[in-house]
Length: 259
Image 1: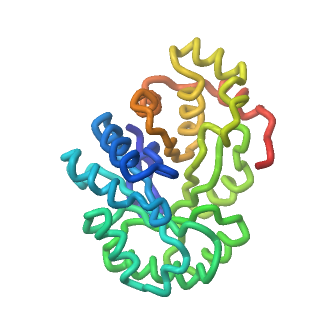
Image 2: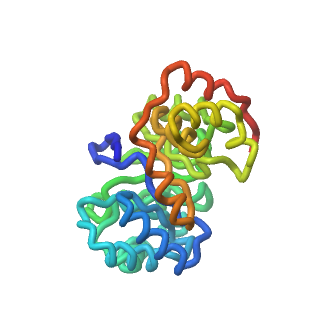
């Protein structure tokens, strides 16, 4: 595994398992398989309705808590429940703290919700704070009003939608970008791009593994979602090769699409 350091000094694994749209049974099985395969980062959310399942997998895995990075997401209406919302997510996960709490969408009174998350951060219930699906202007608004600025922003990001402008902006503030849908928005054309086939043949990797390696070298944290045991193993098998500068440039030259 490789790691990066967030702007508050917390160390974060650069790859994890996403559990979006997984049923509780699927989330528990996939999370347990991932942890047994050496994953150290699992991502869930209140809205996914599978936090308890992820918590069960963590408990069954026997992996020491300090070796794990667990992230979850709260809906902006969390501020109405205050401490109870954060305590509820900890109870569902069966944990004393989470490594990252992310504000799920830029809706409602998200600034009040951010203050609730800051309180949890100060109380040691969470080690880092993030935003999900926030556009740049709303990220700027949170930064302007926050006592504790975000450590991470998670958005759709992949070679067809590289988010270059947003990544540059976040870099100015020391904020890490994290990708959901790292293998594309269900776009089969992405993995069929000839550049990934050629590089996969060169390195003995699949096109998906080449894409994930590109993302990691671009400094993008990623958590591909899969319930397939073989894909879980394949997705983490990306740390034994490195793309050259020329190869990175060729991938960066792929046409960008609007989603």
